[in-house]
Image (cartoon, rainbow, N blue to C red; front, side, top):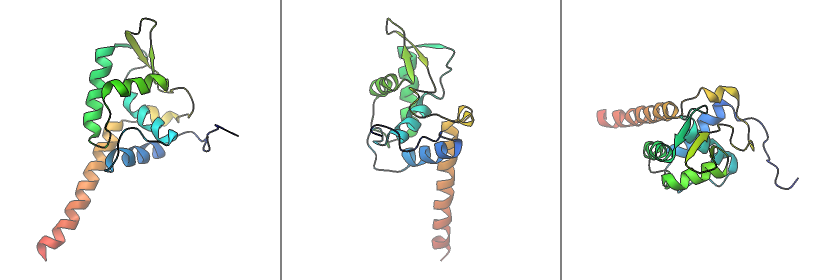
Length: 148
């Protein structure tokens, strides 16, 4: 069927975590992923910190996205304004009629569904843990050489 998603399964916590790590911690990336499922995971991680019951001003949204981009690191070459546009286009942010207030919608446009367990996930904690594990592995590789 043209345009249908080849993988209609809900995105669970394990897939969310593993793909988020792969998308954010590997070098060589530029911008958002081409694969739409990966793009949804990444966009969802960017709005995860917003409370869906609260309205946000554009400066609040941009400041939070700027922090998220800085935290994710050099993997994503995207500015907060472009990211905000992607989030609006994919339904993760909804603007009021005047375009001055935003509300998060963690489901996005619903092209992909997320398991309820993803709601409680902390993307920054997932990436922090992955960075710590990577650093520990690196230290393990360095120690035997230093002792040799």
